[in-house]
Amino acid sequence: MTENTSAEGAIIPTGFDELGLGPEVLRAVAESGYTTPTPIQAQAIPFVLMGRDVLGCAQTGTGKTASFTLPMIEILAAGRAKARMPRSLILCPTRELAAQVAENFDKYGKYHRLNKALIIGGESMSDQVALLDRGVDVLIATPGRLLDMFERGRILLNDVKVLVIDEADRMLDMGFIPDVERIVSLLPKIRQTLFFSATLGPEIRRLADAFLMNPKEITASPGTKAAATVIQGLAIVEEIDKRETLRHLIRIENVKSAFIFCNRKRDVDVLYKSLKKHGMDAVQMHGDMAQSARNETLDKFKKGEARLMVCSDVAARGIDVKEVSHVFNFDVPIHAEDYVHRIGRTGRAGSEGHSFTIATPDDGKFVGAIEKLIGGPIPRIEVEGVPALELDMNARGGRGRGRKGAKDEAPSKGRGRERAAPREPRHEEAAAEAPQHEPQPAPQRQVRSETRRDAPRPEPRPEPRREEPRREAARSDHRRDEPRRGRDDRGRRGGRRGRIDELGIGEMMHDDDVIGFGDHLPDFMARAVPPIPLRGSSRDEVEGEGEGEE
Image 1: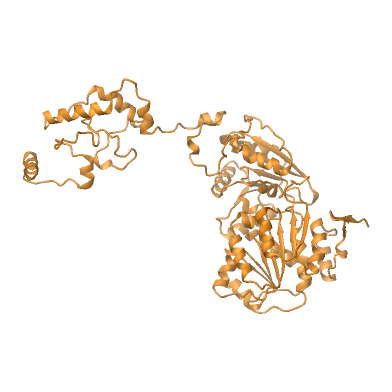
Image 2: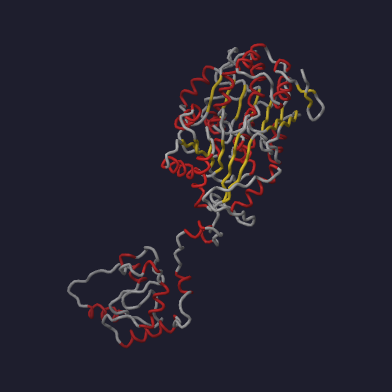
């Protein structure tokens, strides 16, 4: 039997029987079809059995789950659980990852009488409370539901002997760290803590220092490198060509099953409907779906009833589906680490996988961050019938980044930008494009005021020709053919400012010394006091009464 050595020179066991596991666990592992432990399993399991705190870093898909479930089964084999007082706690960032951990305990612990409870959102709380009342040895939970149960008095955490924080970097990305810190504060100070993460950034280091006591740090296949078994490709196209590019790649590739990742949940639904419309067997999964729907979707995908799963990053970790041949990044991930986790869904267990990323020129900075992380460029590919473009490394970011004012930015070169509908000009922009010989606003107001003073009751007449250029400039092209709006149309698009009525009189377009307005009531008076019809009085009598009171 050959021997492997770690970076520190220590000998790494090459068989599960050399790790110190009991015969029942070894039997369950053998029946599962595993004979050789992965590097993270071979290094972590002996230290967990010693009772040491462990800080483990390994790439997704390398068997981190078994590296703590196997020794935990041995540790918990002796002892008995009490009602509402679990003996161990495993925190997971997503429901799917928590369900996968629970499946591992069922598979490896089938020859032990250990009780487990899965506490996640989207499931019946009464059924979960019933499990806790009977006593559980292993509690697998997401932070939100666990805190909810604790605040309701349904669970006590003062008997937890082993704590596992799985996918800590994902916890950080999803904003669960405050909840995790509160949960840890409720646990006994004397405990064994196992901390696993795909990356070890500064924030993760800070959390490890706060949660762990003299830990053994184990790094095996750090998650900043893409798997060597994954063949990667990058297509750079316009935004409008992304769906066509995706459909073309699905047709020309031998896709057995594939994940299609989007950055936003609403884009998952839109892309799913588009693929269904083009006759492709696809399902969708994102965080806004009910847990029952997510379970049904995942079950269909695992059974092969659907080839394509359109999903958000909720499926980037914790979903172990065998023989996934392809991963398509419909959107470039915002965080470079997510790229490694996404493509890690394929090329597992030594098999070959394919990954294709569809980017726009505005994704230059995000692609650059990914290539810097994985230590090399992603090979460029061209799709037949779709123009290939170049990345803009100075762009602020592409679709799905929440950029303010993204619609007002200058378009990039390519036919997709030329198809976009022209933006409606604002009033200030339209006025700026008016002819240079346009009369100034102030003289116009003065001419109107003098006209009103000489003729208190003018009859309706066509508006002056000199006003025509200003009216045409102030009004957008698509509004010229619309019927004129009356007083009841105030507050619609365009507002009051800059509106011109039949007589060419705009809002507040008069001198300060004008006290009469003839047949037309000003907008500011109409807004403050609605017009009241007077019976039995002529217009001259009403105006005369107003002047007498003043």
